[in-house]
Amino acid sequence: MRNANWKTGTKFKVPCGHVNFQFLQKTGPKRQEDRSVPRTIFKQFSTNQTSTGMSELLDKDKSVEGSLLKLREQDRNQRVVDKLQILLLVSKQLSSPEKPDKLLKKILNLLLEIMNVDRAAILLVNAATGKLECKAVNSRSGVPTDHKFYSRKITNTVREQGDAIITSDACADDRFQGSQSILFPNIHASICVPLKPREEVIGVLYVDNLSMSNIYVDEDAEFLTALANQAAIALNHAQLYQQMQAEAIVRDKLERFFPTAVSQKIREEGKLSEIVDPEVTALFSDISGFTKMSSVMEPRQGIELLNEYFQVIVEEIVFPYEGTLEKYIGDALLAVWGAPCQKPDDAQRAVQAAIEMQWAVRQMNRDRAAHNKQPLHIHIGINTGKVAAGNIGS
Image (cartoon, rainbow, N blue to C red):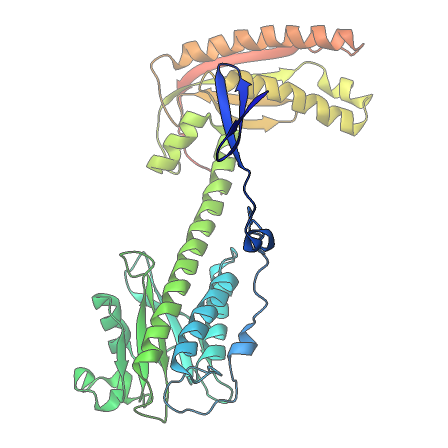
């Protein structure tokens, strides 16, 4: 390292490979304030979640004055912050994957905790009929409910138009004049907002009060809409999660008996239950003398042997040759080619699979001999002909 004095300070030149780095150090006295000001290179932030709970933001005994939100704070600016904080807490509580029924109850429980309403209901669109169906109801203590206390006129309007409706007195509202679903249950003030996770309305959230009119303000409708958006996203995720679980179960069942390509085709076309009359090639195979062999084995050893054997025969031979596993029968199996999907060379595939099985057993016997285990011998039979093929059982 070399140095050279400059008028402004000391210059250091440090070679690094083919590159020289130059550093300049001031020689003049530092100012007093420079010595006292620390140089901050990094900042440290806490990632712990806020400990603020719903109870700290709400006043459960709040009387009905103006907004029906049970916010403890009355200052307008602080109420905006508190509403955002409540929505964040709601989002966290609805974020865990749950069954739709349990999630619906949780949404309504949170709603009644946050707002002074008499009754609340969630209606979801039935995918088969395209109509709204009531899935959950709740009410404050002492208010009776049934699944038809809501106004079908209001809920259907919100579902069709995709916009929220707030009415100060539904019985006197010209938009719903003569509607029996409003007059009969004596509905006064109500709000109904769409459940709309994306572009499509999947349902509606409905709240009302029985005895009081002119009680809802814009703040109530805006907050309920925001809450409904959180609920819609959570419900959509719950439905998708349930659908994924159901599809995983179906896929697991199909892939136990069909090659991956065939099981995927069945899921896409949904023709498993259709009865057809194809020509198929059936392959039967079993282990010779397995009953006698298993009689001197521990039960666990017998199961381990069959799992090892079928893993090779089915997973590595039947499925790659695009055969369908019809069933296991103890140490035997029945596989078919030609159902549920037909190919022109089904018989040839079955014969080739049989040949591969014999070679596979020879290899297994080499491995078994190395571990002083009894060798396996198998029988194979193949036949081609017309059958009636379809799904039997569940």
